Image 1: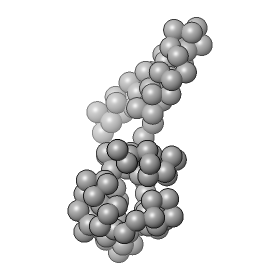
Image 2: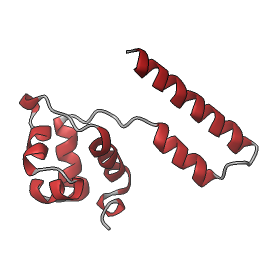
Image 3: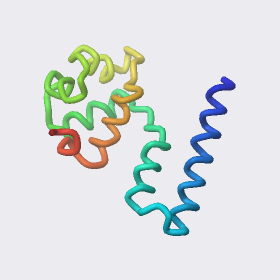
Length: 109
């Protein structure tokens, strides 16, 4: 728990410093947005939310969506199942956040 508090404090201070630097025109708006994105923890995605992002934003099957997120179709199935208790975390949660905000095109390269 001590490491989590230390990490939160460091992230908070980094963001505060970036905001101050931006105020003094040392950081561009683009650089500030990048730092904000790095410092912001993605939300916890519920089963319903994952399914809505996949079906409404990405408009894909579970298998194709899994390929875009570089996970197995079974992982997506577990995320979308209320009873599994599984939620996307780490890079997968960040990708879902990006898809939710900007659409699947943001990660389709």
